[in-house]
Length: 333
Image (tube, rainbow, N blue to C red; front, top):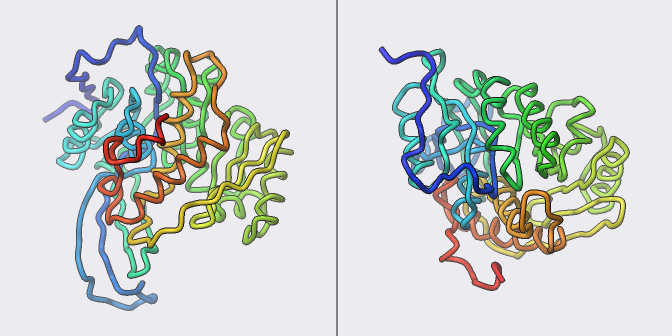
């Protein structure tokens, strides 16, 4: 039998730890199990689906893969089950040229899974079974300190245990590395450091409502939620508003960035595509880990919106993500 904790080293000499990484993601890896249906079932109802597919998912995994597909030098810190889903996930990271030195395996739980239902309008409902993601530890994060230290951007979410995410945010702050925090799935309360440590605090409407207790249904109400989060110590609040784009709120500005109008086929993973693209553009606007961004946040958000809009026009999660070669070169000018 395999040992309880295994570490797979990266397969590629591409990974030189003395060179800065663009994006390091600390988060969850799941296998998505996707059923396409005409409509969502009511409680107790059984429906026939139209098609089924499986794919790689998890918010952290999606964000990391999206950044890598755009050309970022990426690394992932995550925990997988010692099973077929886990081994396939490792291979997927490697095929996307992502550093897997801190992708570790466990026999204590299965790789995380996410059964997803998608209706004919592209709306989705997701159930997450965390599995091995819950075993990722503070010690796992601390072992990645040398990696974080030479990175430009660290990205975190809440699909792993909150204390592990907080350890990653604190590690980034210790080394003056900018971080993007996505409080998803959103709790009703967060420790103060979750607000004050990240460079960007990025959340959607339902997450904003849960954290602030305010209704977020218009640009005006989203602005109020953003201002409440600023009062809690956030530097830059970024509210993603689906087809309406995104709203940036900080001490200097409140800017609504409109999204392209497209026909959505499947919105699964669109928020992660946006965040991965944002991490890419933020990292590429910095000449070194300690340098200030040379582009405005609003311009980065606009470009990330356009990439997320491409993803929703195709089925699947990571399968729907565009590679750099598939996108207009003006996005990278």
